[in-house]
Length: 95
Image (cartoon, rainbow, N blue to C red; front, top):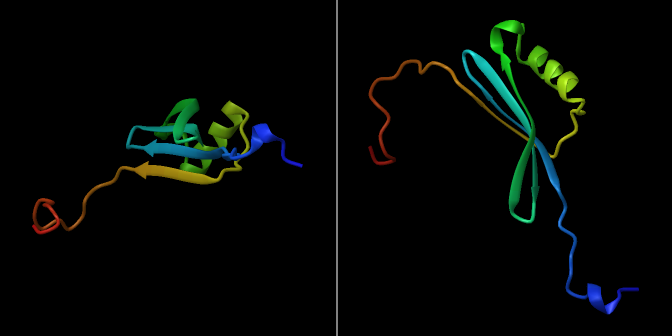
C-alpha cells in the first residue's frame, strides 16, 4: 500500500557506466554514475598506453586497480587516431 507521503514520488534509477579517453600516450578511465540528471565520476585512472599490449589488457588492469567489476549500463570511450584520406578540411554540414 502506498502511503500518502509517497504519492507522486517515483524512483529514479542510477545508471552506471565506464567512460574513457584513449590517446596515443595515455588511456584514461573512470566510472560514471548518472542520477536525477547529474553525473558524477569516480575511480579515475590514467594508464600509459605503452605499458599494455592492447585496450583489453589496459581495461583488465584498470579493473584490478579499482576493484570494480565490468558490469555497466553504458560505456563511452573516445579513441584518438589519424585522419586518413582527408581531401579537404572538415567544414560545416553544408560545407
